Length: 303
Ligand SMILES: *Cc1c(COP(=O)(O)O)cnc(C)c1O
Image 1 (spheres, rainbow, N blue to C red):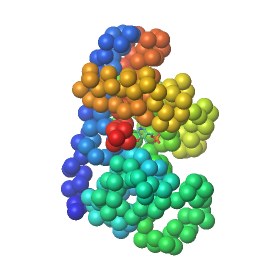
Image 2 (image 1 turned 135 degrees about the vertical axis):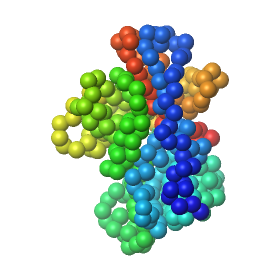
Image 3 (image 1 turned 45 degrees about the vertical axis):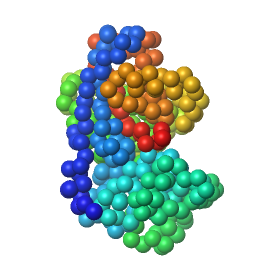
Image 4 (image 1 turned 180 degrees about the vertical axis):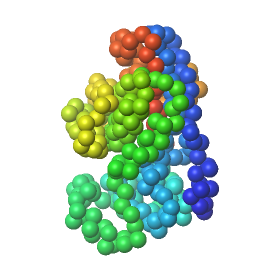
């Protein structure tokens, strides 16, 4: 068991920012960098640490409860962190994997997580106040962290990521699911844009079908005042939906992993890098653009 400071020293922060020079069509006209949040920790998926970092502060809670699916990077990261810090963790999981635990769930069991499997109907109530009230009565010592770790505090953690970037740049590209990661980037860039000469833009890559819906999720995290940051979400790179990975995407990820010095997976980072490759080929970035691709991690989910 570690205390919070000792635990934090086990993380690679700031995460590396590396130049990226693929031989892709159009890539030589721009400067590409990868912000390696996947390298923060071998077990903890990068953006999940960012989103949790401001929820788990001193004094630490005795217990935590959260929600996710059977492959959730969030539950995996949180389960490991709680295990390391000696916090009792309850994971409410959609579906029943008792007969065939996923690698993610096997890890949770190894880390002494209390697992509760619920059906889809129950799971759908996960943010209803009546459901949460009952949960609080049942687990009075626990703080409740929403699915994906996506809550207001998550934005502050994403700001820490943006603040680590010391070079000047034009674009940050990041995958989008619940929207908190992109919302955090947008709000951090808003502050940066108001002090810097350069206008930094954010491009989200939707990893699920959700034109309009994903924008709404992002906006719901942003305070009501006017945002200056120029941002949008691309909706043509979801490959059919969340966790859908047709052969061409799997081949792309495999080739990528054999070529470059780090790995991607098909659910999040594979779609983001595919999108960057496609946007470069289509000439969607002006010549000379400086583009940072955020590698959010997620490799555990690909097991
Ligand atoms: C959860 C996750 C995302 C999506 O982040 P949101 O804040 O939910 O939009 C992206 N990449 C990885 C690896 C993730 O685990």
